Amino acid sequence: MRAVILAAGDGGRLGVHTAAVPKPLISLAGRPIVDYTLSALHEAGVAEAVVVTGYREGQLVAALAASDYSPSLEFVSNPRFHQGASLSLRAARPHCGDEPFLLVMSDHLLSVELIGGLRKVEDAGRCFVAADFATRDHAYTEEATKLAVDGSGPDSLVTAIGKHLARWSALDTGAFLLTPEVWDAVDAAPEDCELSVIFSELAARRRLFAADVSGAFWYDIDTAADLAAASRLVRDHGRADGPHSTRPAFRP
Image (cartoon, rainbow, N blue to C red; front, top):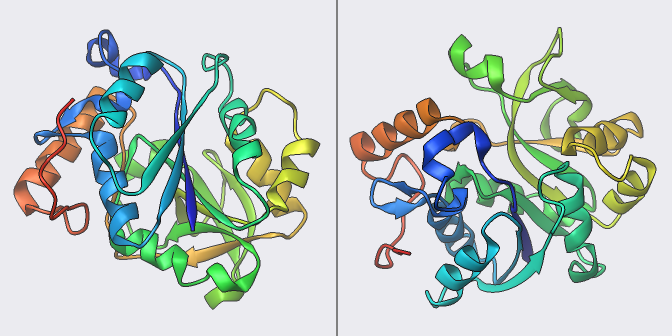
């Protein structure tokens, strides 16, 4: 199984934190943000990852390439990183082959339990989003991408995805298991758009399903407040109910 990690954005909402360092390398409880995701992928048995770079890419590539990571890393550049995230996904396309792959965001803390939940459905031959049906406080859900889901179990169909849904039942954790049919949705969407446009197209075709990962730890880091909250979670809970590694902490 291969993963695609989108790591091209400039992290502008984090202000001074990204003035001199790319967002994936920001330190969180003594480890760069991206280290948590790489550790989770490794422990879930993912052997290869394609990292899409952009903002301060030389700094990011040098740091990751020098760290002897598993999964093994391949780097792809998105020079248009100031535009929509669809361009990062498009940049990864030639490296994805004809097999299913995982799509994750470098600014989401993801646990091995969450990645494992996606891997459990990899033989279904469908596109899945890791969906969290657990209750979260309003301050968190207000900014989160939401999912309207019809049905239950592996046949849970995602009928809509977006930040401003009037009715929804789960949160999009920012992790996906995708088959090559995602490229049909990419081709149907504008070249420069947000990922939610592409996944809305998949949902409209009734080809996006929800993998229930409720209870697995994850956290989306967009702002300085998110970074502080995530740091508290990791420090208070040690392994943050998921993101952990038996390997020495990576330091850029």
